[in-house]
Image 1: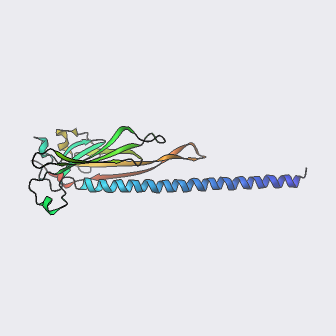
Image 2: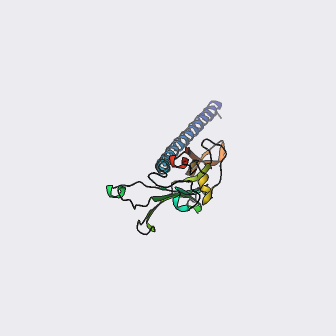
Image 3: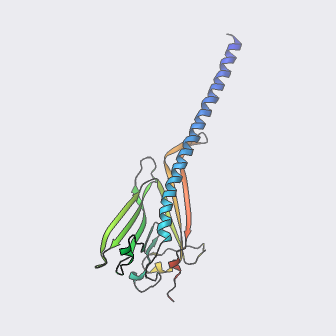
Length: 225
């Protein structure tokens, strides 16, 4: 056997193997970049909705948030780690804006922990946004608009604070304890549906994007004293 030919085959095989491995790494990097961009876009779309809703909490609502006497006068009436519900009065037409009997709409964001929606990523859950409009003559719900967000949300967590800037959170729940909330922080996480595999992590990993923000709605700072 010609030693030179054998050596040539070995060198060619090593070079070919190196090219194949490089192509695999490039493909994995490209796939991870694409998935990361998709995740970031999902996070951007959801956070835009959250910014609009939560920043307008209590807008044009003639109520004192922290009145402990009755649920009727609260701007926020439910504050849980995976759920928040509040009122705002954003009118779309002049007739609505000038209607003294108009009841503010109720907004609710809720993360459905028991609702598995993906076979490939078991951490995916539904994030639910509900808008309820009320009949001004009876006060009963008139229309309920429900929007299911199923784009890979794996975490939707809210921490509540009695003092602006505090690092010690509270757990108000739904009811009278909500009157203590002055600030809250929202954490949103989106993960890919499929895992990305690499030599360093044989079991693979999900690509994740995280968004966090503290909200300090002006109406939550109103004191009843």
